[in-house]
Amino acid sequence: MENPVIDSKDGGGHDDGVLVTCFSEVSDDVTLHFQIIRLDKQIYAWIGSNSAKLGHMSAAASTRPNDTVSVTSILGGGSDNTGSGIARRLALRTGFNIILACNIPKNIPVLEADAEKKLIQKLISLGYTRPRSVGSTS
Image (cartoon, rainbow, N blue to C red):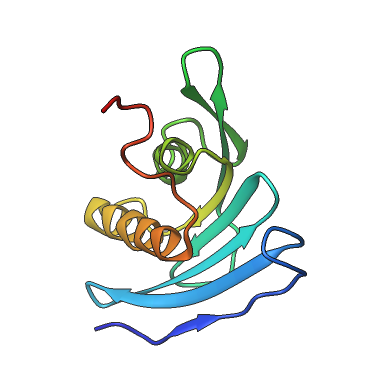
């Protein structure tokens, strides 16, 4: 069962300002809440379930020259916390620096995977991801 998507956007023109998107989805009887804040070359995302607490926060950024991604924990937890893997994959998928705060139960891996899937689907629909063909030769 999906909740309606609630989008709110603040800012100026197409690439100017800050774009904010908020939505909620239900997954395995748990309501997941999402907030995406799109800045110039960075995306801040928050995923929560039971409360509006920030949770663990991770940062991920592309590193040169091999286009790999480095991840660090900013608040709580270590590199194995719930959000660090999601942050790394989002940085790879979008090409943006990612700040991800994640407050979902750690003991339900299916919920984490579902939250990531729903977040990526939303990022795709907003046009914030790179095409999969980037880097391939035709």
